[in-house]
Image (tube, rainbow over all chains, first blue to last red; front, side, top):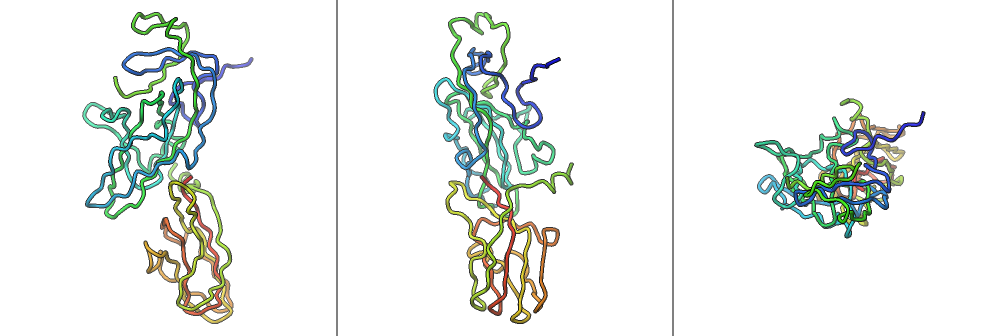
Length: 189
Length: 119
């Protein structure tokens, strides 16, 4: 008996798309889910154009600036599903919205580093979603006792082209699609 | 899991040309790092092979700026023996510059294998 693919966000294992074309997603931005139909999906390849160097750090100046990842900006009515790997020995804080840190608890926010692949080789816990220009920001911190000349982070994932369904469904009015996948595209809760 | 990760590739493996040292006590390029990526790649030396038929010699792997005094301690190549050091015997030093070779006598042959980290 054929089985349906189990697609969902943050899925362990090599990255997979979270929906099929034609399915409905609710993208969490501006504190509501906005509904869209996915019309097209393609891969974002782990490559130089989607690699960023946050810059050099020293013991005296261990932190880079909080850097807006304009290279990951998506076109209008598109969103991206991204995983990331830190290539150099720095810890990297992840923000979505310059002041909204991701991966946070009540009193602290967790950060990515070079040891992440030791226990999460597929990087599924790093998965993030970016809708249009709802930018991701990164800041690297050097925790070593010596200068680190680069702080590289590389991305890969999927690109989704969507059509709005705002005339049919509304989170505020609680008129919801029968089946839809939640896309957490912001840290703004 | 840890052992699994240690053996897991971080990058792609590439090799330098076989360089025959042309001048004594003079560093020359061994593995030239590419200037094309927008975000620079880094290199980890994984294997070193050397052969001398011009006498015993000392070789030094270095970089121009970051590690001009050598990225690992100097290595001694015995005349008419093939010398090999593999990754279990080499410190995992990562550099973002061209790796150079220098010898106290000319004529020794050297080749390295590197793991290239980046995209």
